[in-house]
Image (cartoon, rainbow, N blue to C red; front, side):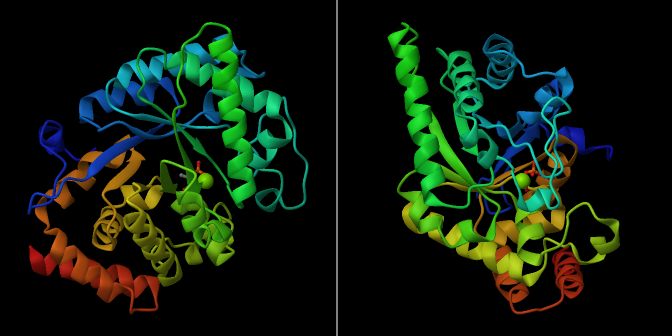
Length: 324
Ligand code: PEP
Ligand code: MG
């Protein structure tokens, strides 16, 4: 880590002109919690729940999950913790739940798996809800959403879990629920989602992969995998504008949010909630504290007129240097 940044941990995450930006972290392992406490994160924008599932070697019980989730919720209380429901398939597999497919990224992934196995989904949601008892800082986020029906089905299951627990005498409430925008179809459905959910969060890693049709893990095409591609930036603009119009918070939780150039671009496009790997948070905070949001807006709208991701990056870099 760059030395000297630690001093920023206690300073507010805001731009030079005083616009506050929510800087949250992505978690998965227990060690992510410890690190986040040194960097003053505003909460968890993405808890990748599949990571503890991968570590264990079998499906964790409701009890085991509740313990893991309680840990996260307590560590950040009263700050919000956004827990994503299981996102397996694609590049994330469980050795005890093998999925063999020719095209795993276009196959049985994320919500598709858990809606086909509502017993897995319900147990996970029950564990999250039980863990949030008397804390109420839980948000639930749905991965790989491609249609409105999937959101409705998921909401029905979440309501069922709340009902079951209430029947058992566990007084939990319906949590805040959000969807990830990480598939092209979802970009065009943002408006339809907004009447159903409390927030949306862009998974820029997958959104880049699917918009550009570039495998995010294939080194042969790594040169053309770039979240600063103009098509991705245009999609990011559409998403945030629709969220703003509906008055619903929109965040980005992919790697783009943790890249200082990406964070400046996102600020300029209108994003005020960013979630990233803890290792990048202070560096992003340092950059955002030095710039003006109006300036970022002007620069970002200029970037939308360029057509080469490399030129977009160098133009932004130059603009930042000029601004000092
Ligand atoms: C993403 O796709 O941008 C994201 C945050 O989720 P993951 O990297 O876990 O797929
Ligand atoms: Mg993703």
